[in-house]
Amino acid sequence: MEFVTLNSGYKMPLEGFGVFQIPDLAQCEEVTYNAIKVGYRLLDTAAAYKNEEAVGKALKKAISEGLTTREEIFLTTKVWVQDQIDEKSAYNAVETSLKKLNLNYVDLILLHQPMKDYFAAYRGIEKACDDGLTKSIGVANFYPEVLANFCKTVKKIPAVNQIELHPFFVQENALKNMKNFGVIAQAWAPLAEGKH
Image (cartoon, rainbow, N blue to C red; front, top):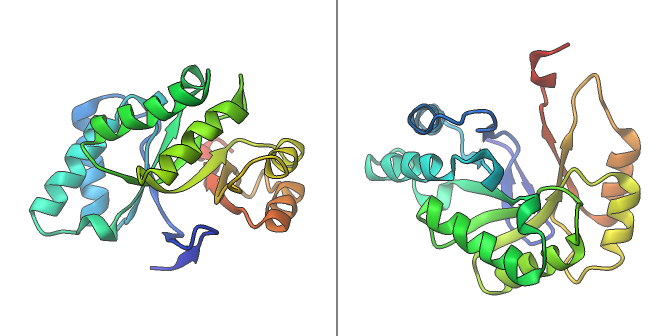
């Protein structure tokens, strides 16, 4: 498996398994478990997907069966828009995600979108990182201009910007901008969700 080193110093696998659009918890647990079983080591969920519990159960099962260890798995979750009211609510959202996942920490917390007071929400995520609730922090769906302004303002530069990225939507300006700030681009829908 190939890895990239984030600006936080942690290594993130280049391939991952996301559970967007799998709201059935039993199905999500099964497919996540099977993803781990076949070798995926990056798992991606979010509060908005409403399936963090299933991902946590699948991970626990895989660990108990000796398929992997917690240290081998790179787990990402995201703070959603309704949680982005202020610093405290974003921090609380991280704690809620950890409870649902039944974990003490995740490897990456992303701010799902730049909406409402996303600067305050990001401060809550920065605090969660400082407190050891996550190893790395980042953003998702931040366009180049928004990301540039954001990086010039925040205390911790995002390690990752998860954006729509595939052969039909290359986003060269976004990639160049992220490179300038040392932010790793992570694709969601790398296969264009099979729609093209």
